[in-house]
Amino acid sequence: PDIVNKSVASTVRIDGIAESCSAAMVGTGFIISPERVITNAHVVAGVKEPVVTLSNTKIQLAGKVIAIDRKKDIAVIFVPGLNGNKLTFIGPATPNEIGFVVGYPNGGSLRTSAVSVSSEFESLGTDIDGNGETKRDVIVFGGDVRPGNSGGPLLNEQGQVLGVVFAADAENINTGYALAPSEVAKLVSETASLMQEIETGKCAKAA
Image (tube, rainbow, N blue to C red; front, side, top):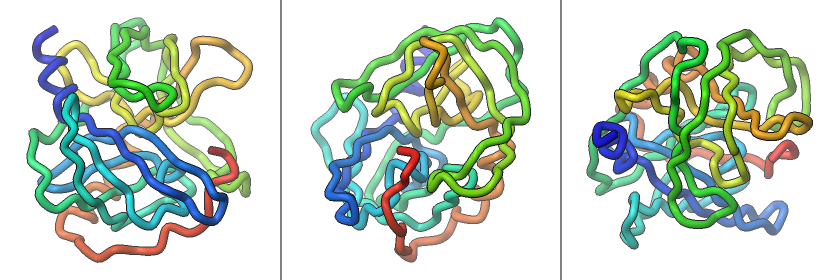
């Protein structure tokens, strides 16, 4: 739908070098407020200078990580000069509704894929370093999720954000997971006026 394509235009590619593990990182993010992008923590963990590429363009902007939550697997990047419409979160997800995953699978070109939303539930897992027990409200959906999709939006048919894609199921093919809006709302509100760059720590073991 055209309204979904408008939201796709607010999706960005995120690249960076994580020196602590000598790895080139690539993921997806999307605009949540003026000059601010949300993504997964494991996309920018260990990255000092993330590069943000605007949707369907070759325009690249330098970003600064201003917040990172390794337990929830979310991070916010300040991108001076970034223009675009912010995406709106909505919930809860409705079982069997059609959704769209937007991202850069395998570090390739931008792709939008239709998926089927299954359910929303509380998940128990580890943080991005493989430590502890972390509770997250997650949305499970049927669809193809690959490395590079991390941090991208799970959209509904009105182009609103149902969740932030963060993982594919290791055992069940064509099953993906997204963080529910309730998991990211606090960090989004806290970073609306932040501009100070922070340390991103070491690479994520779970990436």
